[in-house]
Amino acid sequence: MGDAHEQRIAEELTARGWAVNPWGQGVLTHPVQAALRGTNSSLRWTPDLLAAKEGHVAMIDCKSSMTSRATHRHAIESAAVRAHLQLVAWTVLPLYYVFDSLDILTPFDALAAGQTGPHSLSGSGAPYLLVPTTRCHAFDSAFGPRRRPPVASDAA
Image (cartoon, rainbow, N blue to C red):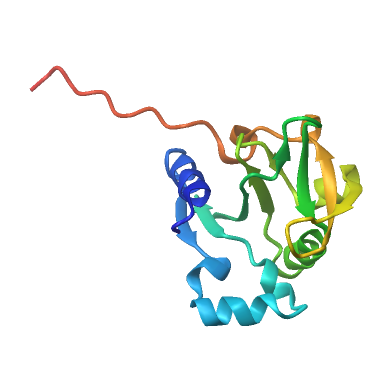
């Protein structure tokens, strides 16, 4: 979990009582990551984190620097959304995209509210869905509020 955004999300989840584990390509060796990126496999889109709390499990895909300040839209690669819809159906677990602002979307939200955007200019050439930030949910709505730290007892 070397990525700063993934680390921040893990800390936010932990502060809400969730147990968090790294998952996805980040736990693979660089040669395996590179080989996987060269395929059309849905495994390319394995979410970054798994989180559990009180018998609930959620998959988290951390989306860093994927929001336009000018248009107020989040960008999610269309292939990722397709793979994540299949993953949600297969695992019967929720999957959340978490952006820098801690806004969250599900793959269904992205599919329903997203508009097809331009193809990536950063190398992959992949098409993106652009989702207005106004369609997002609050982080706390899915993961609960931060827990308050315990108060030291005066009776010692």
